[in-house]
Length: 230
Image (cartoon, rainbow, N blue to C red; front, side, top):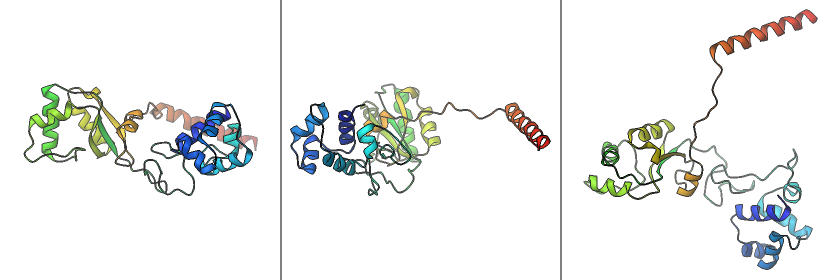
């Protein structure tokens, strides 16, 4: 990635248009456009101000390098927008930057479900009243109402779920592949971001019993060898 690409990336992640960046720097939109197309390079003073505005290091913006002293820009844990140490909340999605993201999930309908079985499942889940749907339920709602819900995709069906709850609800449907379990730290994450990064089960597995025993034995042998040398 070249300087022009890093300027464009940092500007977009900061949620600024070329015109807005130009206003903050006191230059025209055309000047910013030329920087991002590689026709011209900005003066050092403008680069320094961009580092401040974008919350990035000069080493990253100028050279694309990450060092202990100058790392890549900090990003919002939810939407990945570049943020600064002065931000308490993400300026793009509102996610808190001072506290750990909540472990909550959303269940997203990614494509239309038209089967009567799935319609019945959604109706009974809503009728149970255990989970809070992301849509408002009319009084004395009917199967016809839930049918219209499943016929309108993509949309969020449920929010504020634990991972186990989201998986359990997904498993009750007859076509679970049409639904996505998505990490939803803000509790109100926009659908595009939910669908861009759906929850994916980890493929990492713990050590088996015999592998653990072997590791312990190997550790004991190494310790005995070390003691014999000393």
